[in-house]
Image 1 (cartoon, rainbow, N blue to C red):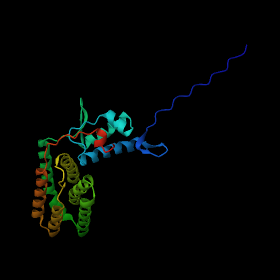
Image 2: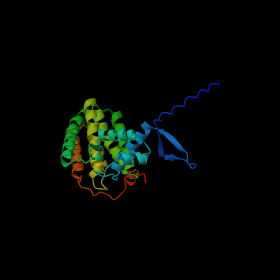
Image 3: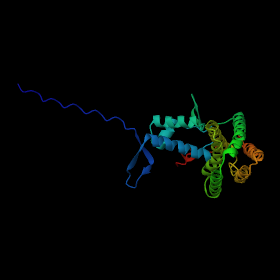
Length: 258
């Protein structure tokens, strides 16, 4: 009796790839470029951060996972990781029922954050003056020249980052890594509040005051440098207006993807 040929086992479907397709990476022939999930997570974070700093995304704007997935061509897990990372950096708030929304710092949040920053910088500046070398001051002045150049040719996000970097650098010069780390977080949170709420057309920091602070430090006038820096931060806080109208735009437009 003839035997029936043995059927070949059916091949298992391939496991889903951990590679996303970047919606911006499409050539003229229509082909797409595969992008690792980690890179897409970073791109989502950068797009949200840049849009917040440019005041396209306003406080309380919803960032639905499904919309992020569609706009960036990623899975839910990638979108969720990006939003969690943004929440860790205080750029967004995660709510159990509302999902992710752009952070909405309250007046009390703002008062406490600026109060802590002013106290910390007042403690760090004398330490920086005691340790700074001629090379350090030369580096600071180069940083200020770069800051001035960005003020005239770059957008608000780049200028705000450079202005914030000046204060973080002063903290680094103190030689106290613990206090420097706290300052970096406070400066980041202040920058976010300023980006969200400061009226358009105002500088995140006054460049001339940065120059004066370095001049005073180099002359050894610590008390005056601390005073000018404290007034500088107080003026920055006073310019903040905690009410902004919601623009009538789609999420894609606010993220600069439309």
